Image (cartoon, rainbow, N blue to C red; front, side):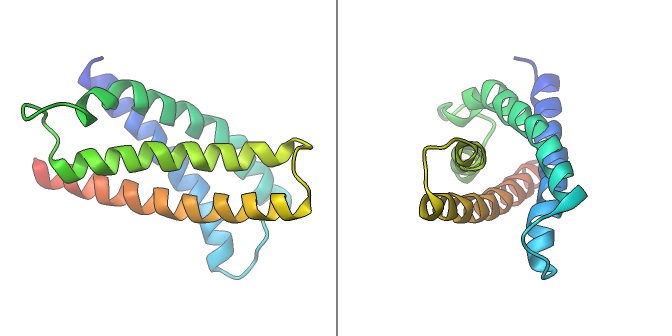
Length: 137
C-alpha cells in the first residue's frame, strides 16, 4: 500500500478516535457518566468509522510494524503500533459483544469496564505513537 493510503487511514483513525474520546472519556472526566441521549447516539454513530480506520491502519501499517532493520519505524514505534491495533480490537469487541444476549449483568459490566480502560490505553498509545512519528521527521 502507498504512504498516502497509510496517512489517510491513520487520519481516519485519529479523527474518529478523537471524537470518540471526546464523547466517551470526556463524558467520564467531566463527571457525567454514563453517556446518554445525543452524546451516546453520536458516539455509536462514529464508531463504524473508527472500526474502518483501525482496519485500514492494520492493512497499511502492519508491514512497517513487523519490518526488519530497514523499517522506517523505530522499535518503540513498532511496539506502539501493535498496542494500538490490539487495544483497538479490544475496544471494538468490548463495545459490540454486550449488544448480544450472551452475557448477564455482571458480564456486561465487566465488558463496559474493559471498553473504558482499553480505550484509555488506546488513546495513550496513539498519542505516544504520533509523538514518535513526529520526532522521526
